[in-house]
Amino acid sequence: MNILKRKDLFWLALVAAAALMPAVSAVASNSFIMHVLILILLYACMSQAWNIIGGYGGQVSFGHSVFFGIGAYGAGMAVVTYGMSPWPGILIGMLAAAVVAVVISYPCFKMLSGHYFAIATFAIVEIFNRVFLVWYWVGGALGLDYPVIEEGLKNMMWYDTKTGYYYCALALFALVFGIVRLLEGHRFGYYLRAVREGQETAESLGVNSTAVKLAAMALSAALAALCGAFFVQYNLRVDPPMVMSLDMSMKFVLVTILGGSGTLAGPLLGAAVLIPLQEYTRALWGGLGGGVDLIVFGLLIIIIVVKQPAGISGIIRDIAKRMGRRPTAAKGGTSYGAA
Amino acid sequence: MDTLLQVLLDGMLNGMLYALVALGLCLIWGVMDVINFAHGEYVMVAMYVSYWLGFLANVDPVISIFAGGAFIFILGALTYKLIIHYTVGKPPLSALLATFGLAMVLKNLCLNRFSPNFRILSDTWLGDRTFQLGNLIVPLPQLFTAALALAVVGLVFFMIRSTRFGWAVQATAMDREAAELMGINTERIYILVFGIGGATVGMAGGIMPTYLAVHPEVGTMFCLIAFICVAMGGFGSIPGTLMAAILVGVVEALSGYYIAPVFKYVAVFGLYLAVVFLRPRGIFGW
Image (tube, rainbow over all chains, first blue to last red; front, side, top):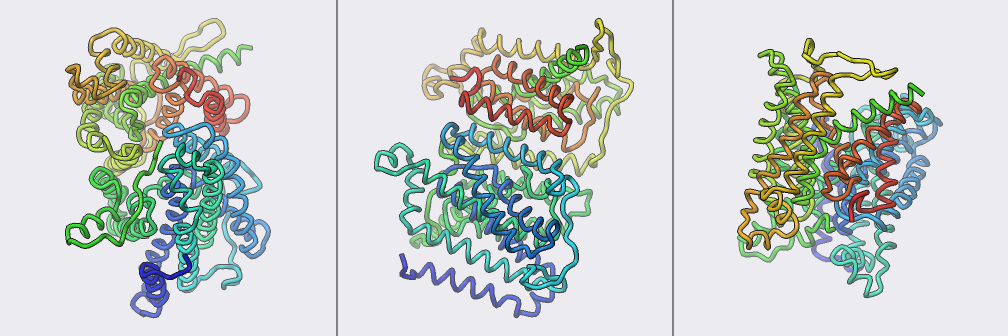
């Protein structure tokens, strides 16, 4: 597990190359390109967090925007309500998200499966959305607007350039993908995949499936909350519909599944294709009465789900097979939504 | 006391509208085990059909229910033929994700063509008419919708229970391969079920512009409510869906009036969680 394999070297090289990106002046001077790069990293991390429980664990949750929102509010309230640095808020947010995830998921895992589980997670998102809308302490429907304070890593805020945000996103990326890479080779990762493939079989071999799923959910929720905290620091504003909505929840799921769920590379592939598509179509057609970017997006979702349910990593695997090479880029399951 | 009765009446009438919206979802879910995420957008499209017929050709929504039903019948059959058909045998949630994509396309197509403005028909036959029943005020459009809903739900229930077509549908729902061996064209059954499911929700959408404003986002909440009604009623059970929908309408009205309007959906979704934790397969499920 500690031996670096060829695949790991590829990932390290990728991170190193990404770290050098701002040195290219054509990239650093164009704030739109920087914005797209930051969003790709952020969405890759969000989807990777979802991938832990949804892809490796096979429990499709549409409730991750709740954890994302809790993380966002943790950072936001630390800065706006209490006038502190966001860092303690981020930690509290991650912890709170993990606790909420365990409390909510325990009865869900025990009682519900398949579509009933999915609909229960929709219901939870709606409940949190409404409660946060009227909860005065967290800012209610008005949300939290960041004041102008000193920039720098202490406040995790930058005004002039996006380079600071870019390196933060890259650190987040290295952290989240590193954790999942470790998980893949660790005993716990094998338990998780065993539970996905056959809960009864795994239990008969002594795996405590509820404990495994709960631990995976807690980890997934804490990482989603971390992404939420970065999101709010980047936007400098948060309100309930921005973070706790079904649309946000669906983004976690869609990016992962379009990239290839249950694989390490899937979330990055999905984000690297979908986010530029979303941002560039918005920039191109956003003015045409609106909606054209989302029409293209929706069509693409339909086509990929219908043609290749293993997502973009499945397409790469097909191409590799046709070229007569052993597939190396994408291994792993595609059985999201195992009942 | 009168207030309570009035709130209960409004809740029940609204609940029957939910039942009509949820009926199509219930059929599709029960027969194919598919969650159709574009269901709310069917409502929205049918509302636009009815609205534009009323606005441009002066057709009253009472007539437009047939146009809405026919339009969504075709849309539903096409959804099956072009999308759902290809997700059979793929991971269980592919149909859900593909129909979510369809929902995005329909919603933004309407947003792009018709703008996000709220539109409502005025001077319709039923309009804002009400009548008194004792101390209760009964709104005529809602009463008509409720009667329509009961009639359609009853008709579909009878059709599934007591006609040859309905038996074929039940057989297909139980075991597709066995049904095929008995000479049932299951592909045709699936298309028809999707079409009929669409037609019922299209009728609901057809009548709604009388008293509800049309806009591209109108379907989202209907879709979630329909999910809740079907899951709470029990896997593909039509009477269960009807009961659950009325319960949802009543709880929504009571909590909206006695607690606060923002909390009505908290109460509805909380009710759903409470029910499925006690009976994981719904009130009428097994």
